Length: 282
Image (cartoon, rainbow, N blue to C red):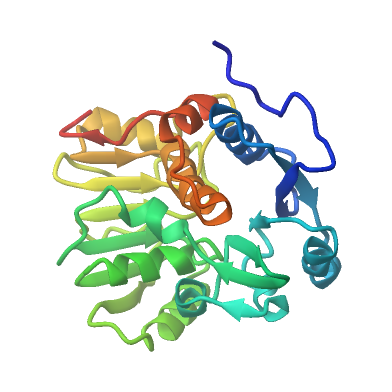
């Protein structure tokens, strides 16, 4: 059976959700979420919502005015949306970033499910972690690792000052995790867990070994593995979470917040061509 990418029809009773960002044309989230709605025979539809930076506030108010059930938020608006929301849940407040909005009795609720996408399938307790990148995607990653019990998180980025500034901000969180910046790029720091929170897909940024775990937030729309994921598989890393699996995991958590139903994980995974987390060398 071929999974549907969009509902067969949209009626006056169809519940709408979407993805706010710029750009959004490349996103696999509409394909994945609409496959999930079809799998459960829900009269819902998920649509791309390209929004310019200057129109973020109007877009959030538009969700309320048009009766949307919610939305995902992607770059570059994950932080900007917070000031326009009525309720900011702790997951979004701690990271200063939201990827999921829920419209609840007219109130816009902001939260983040990125942490579930990152830490859900890893062994993080007491781990030393390396996060590549210091942009908006890095914030919820660091918070998720700290909340999952990481002993230390090192931020490294091409823009060393950005990594230093972000580490300084996040080190003020109420956590026992040490959060610091590495001035080197590419970094050579040793880590149990490596998370790529940059958009780099074609370069192997760091060397990897069998004992390490990798999460790569980036994915290639042609379905091929990123260079870092391919290197991790070749090295036999103990756990490899590629960008498709990350997308599925955070998307499933969003789905459940909107619908109140358990997400059909396998249907979502099949829609984007992903695969389960690979363990013990895959």
